[in-house]
Length: 232
Picture (cartoon, rainbow, N blue to C red):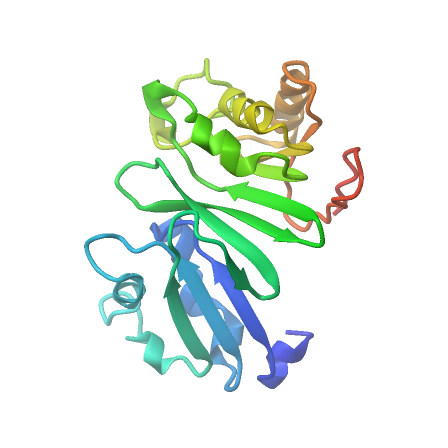
């Protein structure tokens, strides 16, 4: 809000991996939505059951929200469905999406490119017993940075309530198949403190030649660098 968003003069594209509640519950509390003049575009996957816009409208219906509809937000809100593996220009970046396995929810991983640099983001993925599909390696190939789901942590640990997520070993497998520059472990277990995450990173680095680190809120990562210099 310290930028043009407070004046209703900003444009913002938002890439939705999927529409499960933990990824969308902030929608009615995002202040730029309530500033007239802002242009906000939401990109995501169609569910197959109904259009993406209808799914987002359902999150705001009168049973859950006093807003009742996207139409009642003061900003101009646009909703676009993203086709699998079809590149498009979004906010000045080349963006491609790939459908990922994640239970019954249609889920997307994204590859974002500009100026010869590329970042791939897989927020939620469950490879199941079949393991990592080689096509996923092709999708992330050569990326400067892969941000990958790590909610299961060590694959040897009990999965319990982490069904639908990936382990650090699977994240490493994708990174190695795709020969990415660096791997950011993301989507940490909610009961993992800094010590647990730091120990997991240390142990995980011994499993691969690809530099890896734990993603943290507020990090700034230099894609030109070959070392982990993420800062908060």
